[in-house]
Length: 233
DNA sequence: TAGGCCATCTGGTCCT
DNA sequence: AGGACCAGATGGCCTA
Image 1: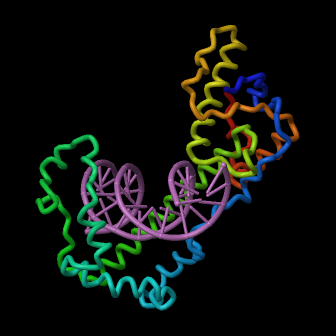
Image 2: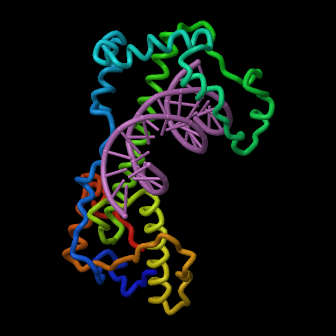
Image 3: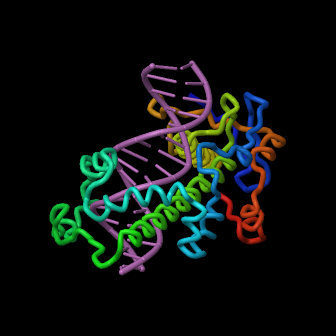
């Protein structure tokens, strides 16, 4: 369990901290692999073009759509697809709204059915939804990346913080800063750190050089740092 | 090889 | 009606 040794610079001037490691995070360059080689921007361009051009450039997807067409039309498809769509339990309606209750089961009146559009049109909309979802997740990941940059921490095994680590660390960092403010005001610290704070890396206090490396300002940061736009704790 | 983490796809639900 | 949000499913990659 980590112990905050010192947290300064609450006014934004200098963050002084004691680091246990000399490794400096390089979050900006830590781009995870595993994604499609196709860039989102490029895919957006595809969507702005004619649909046929998109499929010309994505023959694999076109093949998938050809195979899926029968499924979307008649409810049949590959065994795997059917298994996933039929067997996957759906979560209960969030908030249990009346609209959800009145929508009935899967075949009830609440189920949205796109009548009058072709299978190809449905597939195209599915692809567009996929693209939007991908963009949404990318923006979420950018937010995680920004969050990692502003949290003082020590790189573990030369790898980036996972999402859960980032959130947990951020939570404890906020707690630590809040306690620091309380202490400076002569008040009782509001939060206590104990063994329940699982998966908690210490909020390492970095020295000034390390902090600067940790917080390489992004373009957005530079925009935000304009006079009057930065608020302090 | 198991387990963790992640990106992506997918369809239901909510919101505008 | 359509986009945003959400969570389950799946497969890939990496590490112990």
